Image 1 (cartoon, each protein chain N blue to C red):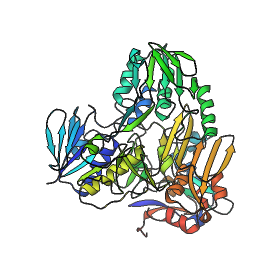
Image 2 (image 1 turned 90 degrees about the horizontal axis):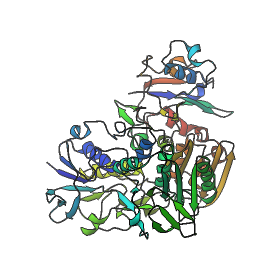
Image 3 (image 1 turned 135 degrees about the vertical axis):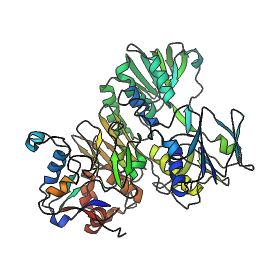
Image 4 (image 1 turned 30 degrees about the horizontal axis):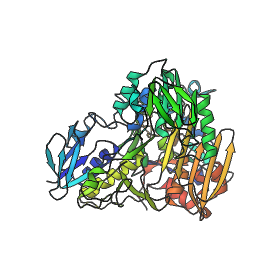
Length: 146
Length: 410
């Protein structure tokens, strides 16, 4: 299946992916109206230090530990995509405790949200990838090389 | 066609069902459910009382789960005895079920120590099951004075759940600190202050000497008047079925890394077991939900003829009270280093060049990176530990490790 992959050599650390993510999941039509003067809660985060930057979002693991650990049974995997039912989540953060990639963080309401590859919003394909100015994030099929 | 029987209908049972179905789509699965409910998220009962979820959303699996997995569920009956020779389970309604592979997922029960005068208390509850929560909900009102015996995870989550629905809450514990099973003294003190600021009153290092109706006389001489009593002293693993069948039990049912008990064709999973703790290398009861699922899943795969090992269990907890999140993992052995900031407190325990455990209060972002260091026992010489102590970040890994993590299928 297609997943999001990171080419950290190309990341400029511009954080545009975070804004595109927050906008894509806002349900609004105007980006300025959706994000201006607001703290954003994107599902992708740019990490880094003075040497390197890269964007981290859900890996949609082959064997996702978050799914097995969720106390509410709110996280599931369907057709390769790890999804969360926010109406079931109580914000206990056990998924944050167990995700080895540090890929999850709660939304503004304290309830978890996660990257679902923009398959459930109007974009239909990851907005972070579409908007990345330097192709540092790509959405493609890759073979398991491990 | 293979006949699978699972005694218990909690998280471990769901793991077991999904494990069996991974390896065998045909066999018959019978689930023996003492509780008259489809599987629900047990830890959600405090969130239910807090109105953060409701009965409909507490279901751990979608409706149709049992049907889709070809399970027959027997509600309201208990497994009474296992006949390991005949491979059958006798139920308390007198019926008998034969199995080819059995999983004991009986969980634990509240431990209520002998307490003088307890029989004089009219409204007393434990806090373990959905029915416990519903009964407690029925007994409280906005004026209730609630006494909770036990300042552990269960007692304090109960307190949080009912705080806005009762008049006052006093929590007592024999231990001298809150959450004594997961926090050291300094961290417990930070959390206790936060709980007190949110209206809880504590009597620690103290225990009830005598109950007289609505009064608890404490060993210290203090007296507490209360309307509703919650007993949350601790839990005991339900080991009796396997013990009586001749299996090895200690504090829990002894299982190996394949979740086999010492009795052939009997597996066990979840809070009733005592298994391998990868953070200490010893065996212990690890009564946490992720462990229950992963044990159950492993047992299920193996019951269906697979060959799966689960040897990466560690103690870990994510628990929040009134907006303050706490995460802990592993063992608190070796040298402790601390990072304090305005947002919170982090403590790390390093031994033999490896992260053995941690406690995070208030600062829990990307904590799973720390948990993985504990679980995988990564030598900290391979990472920039001084940096990662301050900020849990993937930058501390080598470029090659990051390429695998974020450029490969994981």
